[in-house]
Image 1 (cartoon, each protein chain N blue to C red):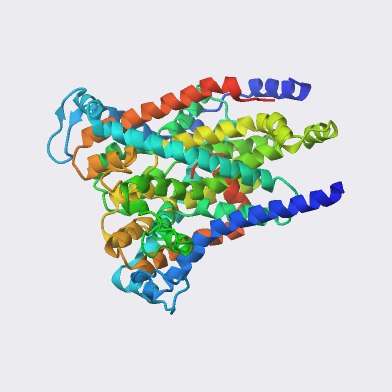
Image 2: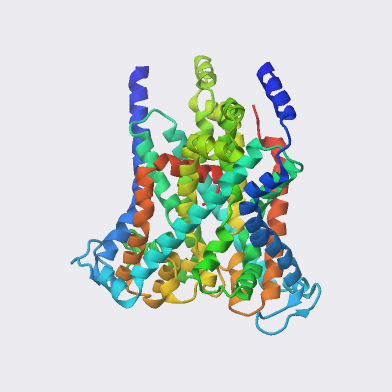
Amino acid sequence: MAKQSQRSNVFWITLLVALGAVIMLIPFAWAVLTSLNPDATISINDSIWPERFDISGYTALFETLPFFKVILNSVGIAIIVTTIQIATAAPAAYAFSRFNFKGQNAVFVGYLATMMIPFQVLLVPLFIQMRIFGLIDSYASVVLPAMASAFGVFLLRQAINQVPRELDDAATVDGASHLRIFTRIILPSIKPALATFGIFAFMASWNGFIWPLIVLRSPEIQTLPVALAGIQGQYTTEWNIVMAGSVISMIPIFLVYVFAQRSVVQGITSAGIK
Amino acid sequence: MNRIEQEREIVAVAKPRTKPLLVLAFLAPSAIPLVVFIFVPMISAAWISLQKWNLLSDAEFVSFDNYVSLATDSDTWRIFLNTLYFIIGYLPLVFTGGLVIALALNRMIPGRSFWRGIYFLPVISSWIVVALIWRWLLQPEGGLVNTVIGFFGISGPGWWTDPAWAMPSIIIATAWKDLGFVTIILLAGLQAIDPQINEAAQLDGATHIRKLKRITLPLLTPSIFFVVVISLINGFQVFDQVYAMTGGGPAGASNVVVLEVYDLAFRYGQAGKAAALSWILFIVIAIFTWLQVKGQRRWVFYG
């Protein structure tokens, strides 16, 4: 008896979860469907399924906008930002984990404090800074402020703390320098954490909106989210074009997600940032 | 402290000081950008907030005028109330949904990680994409939601075109996007609970509801606390979805604080006032977070 009721419980719970999952998926499916529906430009009151399909939404995107360039911009900026963030965070993480220096805790707290500062407070002064440097409307204006990530330092330090100190002690006895221990022992041991942080940094850059919106003005230098917001203003009723752009910009993130679900979930959960 | 930890401690104390130059070499690549692009702008924002400045001509020092004019302007109160309205609508919705799904996923159902993966899809998507999709879903004429409602003979509301429905539209879209995030956090909390506690309660004849109320939820409070703090901080900073779904309209019905900061600085040429508003927001967030951290003793249970 008890077994049977448990089994029916599992059935109802699975049904509930599946229903919720359908609600999660419908908007994406609807976006794909709309992107292929040339009649999404006019109101379609009585039928949900499109009467005809074509890829005019996609071709219009590439014909009227430097859309290929926009994709390259997003890919390029995300890769550069990710590489730089890993390169700046890893040595700092090593220093906080393995060095012993005066004011170590105070400096670390200083790093953590940067995570508490909401970005919008920095908008106006950062914009002025970039203008002084003459960098408005350049890739550098997006890359420079994203060079260092305190979150990355924190995450990688946790990982390095897990690496047994006996390993570096043995290497020190053999006369290895800190640089050598860092590159030969530590970095190979924390590959999973590096991957988690890398994916997180890539996604944050790929999805970033407010800052690129402010500093990237010319269409051929914009990133995907900024260009998409612009498309929507330009084609207020041509939903197939808007959805085609949305679908394209989702593809890389979905691919990363499919191949590295665990790391993605870990990165976002530990950052508490969306 | 056990013996191994004690020994570690001794080793740590005995560790020789690292040469300052070496420390500098490892820290400078991250410390310099953090100082230049976070600490310096943070301080200069405070200075800019005391100026009248359109970003073009010379700035004029006006001391606390910007703060006074913001505090006495009913529009400022309105955008803060709108932001609160967003939080009050969004938080219970996403929390209840996330808790139900997390409790369900915590059971031994088939395909758990597959389902979890689907719930997380909106979390990894860009806000602009999600906002555009929801704007289209909630299009009053021809949008999927109103079309489906129409099948049941109900005529749906004007959603983002209607001042009364603009904020609910944003709330629904945000709850949908963040549901997976809340679910994952709560699920991690649930999985940390020792199953033996629940088994013992079951042997004592406790019902499901009773177990949930007396055991699961109290033990889950640290995760719930985390979700509430993070959601509140993110809620005050809501921007992308408002910008892309409603632009703050119609007639300012869904205008929020960060959108106003953006508009003041980059559309109305009032950089000083924008900086002042951003500092006010920072202080409000800090106060709310501090209150929660202080208040957690009353209800958060660290077992």
